[in-house]
Length: 113
Length: 113
Image (cartoon, rainbow over the protein chains, first blue to last red):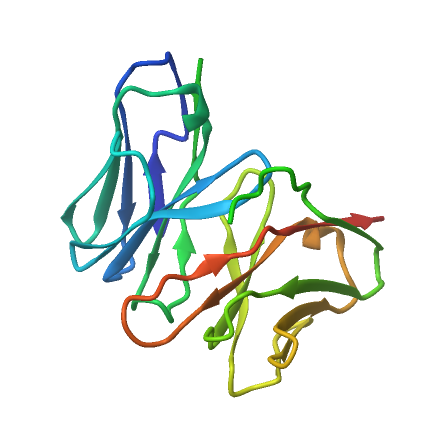
């Protein structure tokens, strides 16, 4: 069974569209994260939720809105997509905040045309 | 910070040789360090971690060394195998409170058969 899963794996869309990426973890973890990885492989945290509460909200445009319906799910909605949003988005989870090993999903490759 | 203008450092190693991947961390308050391995097309995967009260920790074929004086971390891989080819990230974090884990820029390891 996949520990952290993301859908879709690939997402190709036009500028200006709105899209969502879904993430689910079956590890029973309390904390979930969204990261953006650029073309140079730099991993930057975007958001983190602990027990469904937003803990980290980095300087991300407000076109990005995370939603955590329950501890096992963390979705990312992106409005008015721009070319610069093209990247790989990773979801991750950890059992505990900060100190915990993070388990990453397979990533969602977003290409904005 | 961002990776703008930086290229992903690459280390080429002959199969069977030992590899040493280095990382400089920035926050002297960090007390928890992790190494992740990211294979092509996959999410990062935990390799080994070390707390600041230790200088060295060994796993299976991997050793992490921590030098807090110069804020330096290294990952040593013994008898490097083709399956070790990947991008390796160091990450630093702090215990206590809602402190995020920050990833370094990554090093690409290429194993030459």
